[in-house]
Amino acid sequence: MSLTVYINGKKEELKEPMTVSRLLELKHIRPEVVTVELNERIIARTEYQETALKAGDRLEFVYYMGGGNAN
Amino acid sequence: MLRLKKELLAQIIKQCIKELPDEACGILAGREGVVEKVYEMTNADKSPASYLMEPREQLRVIKEIRNSGLEMAGIYHSHVASAAYPSSHDVELAFYPDASYVIVSLKDRDNPDVRSFRIKEGRILQEELKID
Image (cartoon, rainbow over all chains, first blue to last red; front, side, top):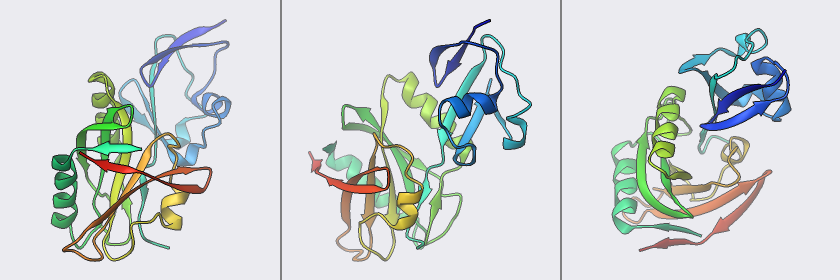
């Protein structure tokens, strides 16, 4: 059973029900370098595995933006 | 190539000087490599040696850029006492291969050096920064 979600503003069809954790895996996104917002709420990394996506969910992924001259 | 209006460059340099002794950071919004708006961001690290954007502020700005029909053209930050060249820390945290990474060096504060790079899979490529 597929479901439609919105990822970074774009509509995407997921072929099967899945968790946030699985979605990150499919998109080759390392969980430790991204912030995930689900329906306007930032979710903790510890919640990724237990958070199942529902039809119409709105996800935002933003990678960490950082760096600087610390070597 | 990244194109930046001189007024926007002046805004960035002003922010970088204002935030001394700490590094400053921000996001560049535009279309097809032409910057149209500068978002000055908070350096959550508040450090002269590193920067990290705050996730809530990042999310708000990214959505605002998208809703205004623009794209994230680049990310900028300052090096307060070193060259305008990506550090190993910059490379390690460069997750946007399609974005320009602009570095403002304040090593010579009277003559800031500003350069733009692409960072893809750990490789650093300097690109032309055209000031209009």
